[in-house]
Amino acid sequence: MTAIKSKRIESIDILRGLVMIIMALDHTRDYFHYGAFFSDPTDLETTTPFLFFTRFITHYCAPVFVFLAGTSAFLYGRNKTKPELFKFLFTRGLWLIVLEVVVNNFFWWFDISYSFIVLQVIWAIGISMIALSLLQFLQRKVLLVVGFVILFGHNILDSIVLKGDSLAAILWYILHQGGQLATGPNSVIGAYYPVLPWIGIIILGFCLGTLYDKSFKSRTRQKWLIILGFGAVILFFIVRGLNVYGDLSPWSYQSTTTKTIMSFFKVTKYPPSLAYSLITLGPALLFLFAIENIKNKITDFLLVFGRVPLFYYFLHILVIHLLAVLGLIMLNGNWRDMILTANTFKNATLINYGYSIAIVYMVWCFVIALLYYPCKRYMLYKANNKNKWWLSYL
Image (cartoon, rainbow, N blue to C red; front, side, top):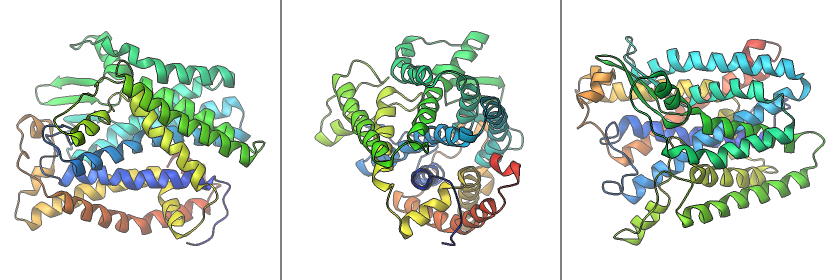
């Protein structure tokens, strides 16, 4: 890889690059696997261990993505005043919301009528950044407490369930419960990433940035990464083992040991439960510890994707969707079936569509290979044009 001068923390970008690559696996499965549009790969009655693992490993993507967005916000703000950081986070958060609604929904569905609008991870990051733009004025210790209270306490709210289209219900869908809202006879808005837990995660990621401050010694940082990482993993097994709090879906003994293990690891993503957050963020922190002083061709490869996350995110959705259209054309199917509307899901148009999990993995590898060069070009362009302010929004 061409050498470039950068003040970025490589270990953070390497971790981000890894989860971005894994993210493409999940989205490739969404568009290519048998019944993916209408089935749950973690349903113990219908899944296989390999399919379950394929879905479980991709659980690391969203929380690490959001968590590192907070860390990057801290690093960006090191040489900025709090009002300057507020302006950047607030405007970037608004921009991400616009991109989610307008660009991401089109790339996901190819529906120019926008009959099916889904608020996903980019939306969650946008809202979380706006919240962080305000909360960063708090003292760091207070902010850390707020983050932990949200992460450990939001599952107390699981029992609050609202229905309908009242203002209170809509706000609750957005904040914690999640849900769909019919905006017409054939149109739907889905809030699948309730923002409260994600705000807690981005706050904790912001606070983690303190470990990467110039005044922090590497040895001390690595000690804390080990403590926090192993602590989160151990706490996951305690919380999950007790089976009384921390997830909407308690685990249970199944007919086989394999299914029991899958039940144990079937944690809730929507909204991200305490158990889900612990088992994803804990290993991520351990990875940051392990990768800090490693430099080789693999880390160089991961850096390419980790340094252009937003560019990569939108590009990989577009490419995967276009490949799904191409697949239908090659197999003499109706390519228009890949224009996904609310009626597509209502009428189960693609109920019999899909390919084997082996095909999913092959397409995933092809997508990563295809995206490497444009991402590398854009990474170099960003590195050599730091004076262009608008690049920080892309």
